[in-house]
Each structure stands twice: as C-alpha cells, then as structure tokens.
Amino acid sequence: MADIDTREAVYVTDTLIAEDIDAYLVQHEHKTMLRFITCGSVDDGKSTLIGRLLYDSKMIFEDQLDALTADSKKVGTQGQEIDFALLVDGLAAEREQGITIDVAYRFFNTEKRKFIVADCPGHEQYTRNMVTGASTADLAVILIDARKGVLVQTRRHSYLCHLIGIKNIVLAVNKMDLVDYDQAVFDGIVKDYAEFAKSIGIESFTAMPISGFKGDNITSLSANTPWYAGPTLVEHLETVEVLSSVDADKPFRLPVQWVNRPNLDFRGFSGLISTGSVKPGDKIRVLPSGKTSSITRIVTFDGDLEEAVAGQSVTVCFEDEIDCSRGSVIAIADNPPQTADQFESTIVWMADEALIPGRAYWLKLGTQMVSATVAEPKYTVNVNTMEHMAAKTLDLNAIGVAEVTADKPIVFEPYAENRALGGFILIDKMTNATVAAGMLNFSLRRSQNVHWQAVDIDRTQHAKLKNQKPAVLWFTGLSGSGKSTIANLVEKKLHRMNRHTFLLDGDNVRHGLNKDLGFTEADRIENIRRVGEVSKLMTDAGLIVITAFISPFQADREMVRGMLPDGEFIEVFIDTPLKVAEARDVKGLYKKARSGELKNFTGIDSPYEAPRNPEVRIDTTVLSPEEAAELIVNTLLGDA
Image (cartoon, rainbow, N blue to C red; front, side, top):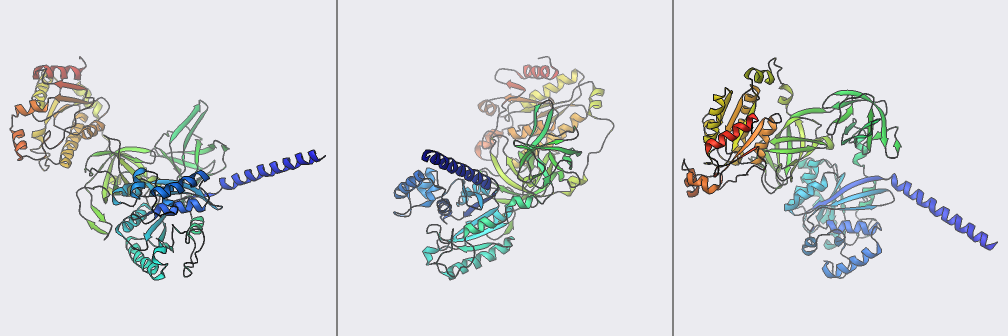
C-alpha cells in the first residue's frame, strides 16, 4: 500500500512540475521584448552595468561565475572583487585595454519582460559600431561618469540616438560611489545634459544615479541615495513602452523577403511586418507596381492566423495572381507608402575611405537593393556645437545631409515614421563593405514632377532603320596605351562597312561637355557619368558608340554598364603595361606627373583598376593596332 502511495505521490509531483514548466514557458513566450543599448564615453562603465544586470537577473551559470571570479583576479580592474565588465568584453584586445571595441549583444529576462542589450563602444573611432547597435534599439542608456560629467562622446552618442529615432533615453549617472553619492554632483550633470538635450531636439529623458559596480539603484533603490525617489533601472526597463507596440498602430507594411512556393498549389509572400496589422479579407496594394488584391490567408509554422501584427514574421496569400517578388512592399490599399528615386538623406559615414560624390554604391533599404549615387553633401553636423559646416565629402564617423539618387524608384517612408522603410545602408560595389548608414528624410519634389515623355519612335525603330544593333564599345586603359589610336581604326573599319557610328574621345569631350571638370577622383567619376548618359542617348538613336577614356575605376565602368540593356556594353581593355605606356609618353604627361607638375595622374599618383572580366582584352605588346581593331570589330559583329 505504501508503495502505491509513493508512486502516486511521485506521479502527482511530476505532473505538477510538468504543468509548472508548461506554464513558465507560456508565460515567457508572451513576454514583450525590449531592445536597448548602453552608450557614452570611454570607461563610463557600460560593460560593468550590463554585467551587473546579468548577475542580478540570475543569468550567469555557476561555471561562468567561477570563470568570471578567476578572470577578475587575473585581468580585472576591481582588485579582488568581481569585475562584471568581463562578462561582456569578450575580445582579447578589449580585456587588455579595458575598453569595448565591437558591439556585444546579451540576452536576459526578468519576471515581466525579456531583454536584448547591446554594449556599444565608447571610442570615437568605433562610432560606426555604435550606430549598428542603435539601429534596432527601443531605448538607450546614456552613461556618464559622475567624476567627469558630460563629455564629447556623450554628446555624439546622444545626437546619434536621437537621429536614429530612439525616443526613450535614460541618463544613467554612473560611479556615484566614487563621488560619495553627492546629490549636487548628480543635479549638476543632469542640468548640463538637459541643456544639451534640448538643443538637439530630445524632448524628455529619465535621469537616475547608479553604481554598476556596487549595484546602487539597479534592481532596488539604494540607501546611499535617499534623495532619489525615481524608479530603479530595471523597473524602468520593465515598464517603458516598446517600439513594436507603437508600430502596431501605424498603417500595414510588409516588405517581401521571399516568395514561398513549396508546391504548385501554394504561392505566398513571406516577410516581417514592419508596421500595422492585417487580417484575411483586407484589401492590399503591392508596390512599386501598384497592383491590388485581398488577403486570403495568413500562414505561419504553427498554423493560420486570424490577425498578424507588427513584429511577426508571416506568409500572406492573395486572392489574385498579381506580380509580387522580393523587394516589393505589401501595404494597406487605401494608405500606401510613397515611391521615389531622389531623396534628401542624413548619412553617417562608416568607412575609412571618404565618400566619393557621384560614385555608384549599392543602396539596401529593407529587402530592396538598388544602385545609387550620393551628391556632394549640403553640410556636415558638428555634434559638439550642432553647427552646420560646409563639406565636399564625408570622412569616417562624419554625419552629413546629402541628396541620394537611385537608378530606379524605391518604396519608402520618412525614417521618422518608419525605420524599416526609411533606414538604409550603402555598400561599396567593389569590396561589398558597408560604408554608410542613412535615413531618408523626404523625397525631392523634382523626382515627382519629372516624368518620362512617351514617344512614338523608340530605340528599336531607330536601330531597325539603320539595320544594326546598338552598342557601346568602351575602351579603357592607361594614358598612352593606344586607346584613341585603336578606337579610331575601329570606327574607320565600321564606317567602310556602312555602320552608323560615333566616336567619343576623352580629350575631345573635355573641350566641351566636360570642360568644367578637373581630374580629382570626384570629377573623374562625374566625367564618366556624363559620357555614359550621352552614350545611352546615342544608342537610343540606334548608333554604335565608341568611347576612349582612361575610366580608371571599375565601379564607374559598371555604372555605365548598368545604364544600358544587357549585351550592349562591350568593355575593351587596352592592356598596356605602365612601363610601356610611359616609354611612349606621346603627350609628355608621364614626365610632368613624375616631376610633380601634374597631379592625380593615373598610374603615378592615382590608381587604375584593371577590368576583371572585359568582353575584349587587347595585349598591345603582342597585337598591332590594325590586328587589335580587326579583333574588336569581329567581336562586335559576332564573327570572332
């Protein structure tokens, strides 16, 4: 009998434990998630604060605590006490220097909410990393060392947080234990920061005195600050409104990530809902096409939903078979976002190499990817004085306002209204490195007022009249390589074959169309852009265009290729070694460049990026100009 009672007790206990676990999992599944960052100047205690939060929320395993204790004695900065910063500073370089270099993400939770916190670096040279961490945050904890007050990086990070659209700011005056918890020190710092915050547009912030090392006012109010009656840091983090709840009240937007076609009977469009909510039966509009339909199903891994809201990843199905693909945006039919191809934008430059106005970069906005150029900045912002300063480019960590032009319309909303459809990154086409983060402020009115004029005679009819296929033969190579000589021979051969051609030579163009341009990198790019546009117009007229330009940068040649239909851009690399080209020096340019009389000369003090996969490569050390011209003509006409 006793054995039966024991078995029943074990059964009941196991059942209760299982039920408790299920209840716990359900409870945590429905907790809201707050993403926040810690930022400020170097050594303000950001990593220590996060380490304290992890420790106090019981998110450290026993073996981690043992390792932390041992590491604190070896490389810590707190004597024999635990150095909580080591929980976050994972890189060896960070531990050696006692600073944060990269963005460190950590997860923890309390009974009321789940958190993802990004520990952002304080050094100015790592500002680009801070922008990365702030881009998805709902809240920013700006730390200030009570001994130092408001510093340059405090201002910089506060301005960036405001710029990126973080509405919830916590001013955490840290290391109060090192100033004997003096209220006057705290009040003075809050007053100084309030004046600065007002000047940059921060309407409100929550100030609190803390000690990340000692734990004052982190999870419970400290007896050391009886004069402080506000919330603890954790209490504030648990109750502040998260971004997803605000986004849920906005119009429905779903950037399409991929088209879901598991079989012939199912076609859905998957993505993360950025704002708003949607139900089956809702009328929707797909942009940029503008086609309309209705939602029939909202599909998830766990089954169909009756409603989906901002922050959920779903697959939606349409009533009608309309065009929709990756990069499209599904929106509520009667309140869609805008489309445009020219914008005023605020840009944070994140690359060591400066912005080159006019150069084509990849612009990635959500799931959309287009080629775009950035004009010379209107101004940059001095984050210390908020002064607008004139600038011709953007250097590392610079913040500026500039016009951005995309090669085709994109679906967008101002960043202040929608981060997902207003925030973008710029990617270098050569290296695939992210060079900038930007925020679209508004579309330029001229992009809405200028439209293509429909014509009755198009490029196909122009080409048919001339009985030829339009093309651009783009000759590139060093000065003295023989581009102009060979290009001239090619045109003569095509002329004898009754082909309609036009030769654009680099020197000749600079006497007229481009006489206002110099030879800086930016001017070279604009030179090629203009020639590309002229070449495109000439191919629209049905001509075979022959160009002879050094065009030293691969990205700029690709920009011209992108202006033309597939197959119409034929890159001809006149491959002549620098030593051979310099020995010819017909115009005496290399001699002047070597003596310093001629600046920014390709091959000497300005780089030349040789084509990777040209359609035609001419080795002038092997082929004569006549042989080269014959090979190019045969390639063009398809006889080679």
